[in-house]
Image (tube, rainbow over all chains, first blue to last red; front, top):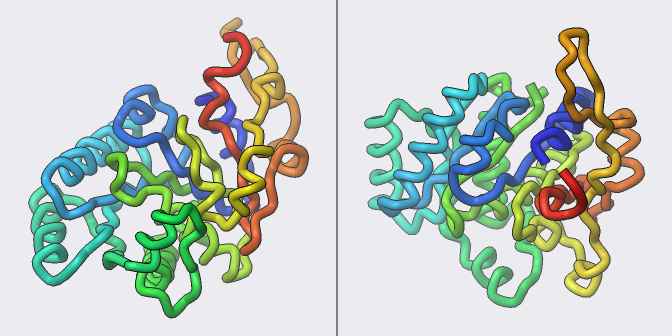
Length: 140
Length: 112
């Protein structure tokens, strides 16, 4: 799969968004080396934050140009503060803060696509994420 | 400056963020390939592929890779055709515009 992904990432005329396997193995195998931005998802609990930190470290070791954090499933100010504090403590730049979205959970429960309508909380935050990625030079 | 990977712990919402980001970017007018590199793929659902069609979806075949020997005599596997041709042949169109490419189960299919 590493060679296949590397080959497909040779195309520069499109934006590629790669949903990697959960955990760290793809990074230790070098599967991600051909991307230029790595987003590590940070859910506000310790084990998820630790995995995100390790992903970020491995991504930097691979030489990925931009390694950013994206907070997800934030249920309130305490969650937001927890992720911000952790990211700051580990030198990880947060480029997105996605709130917990009941619509997304509901869609997952019944096996449907979540709404990506701009007015839903998750999609609005991910729209902001895209704007930030553009400003950071991660998107054309 | 247009190749983004999304990583994290299982259950953290990686696939949701990947899928919605791909849809938002495609709706903004960008051509987008959404690549599912997870061995238990479910990006298709997040991109809005109907549930009853999920069973038809196939991973990209390993056979599109060809062995190539470089000047140093080192052998490596490369795509046997341009990536855009691969996407046109094996990509799956999704409702908001991203082309879905499934490759998470490739390692388990075929030799090598």
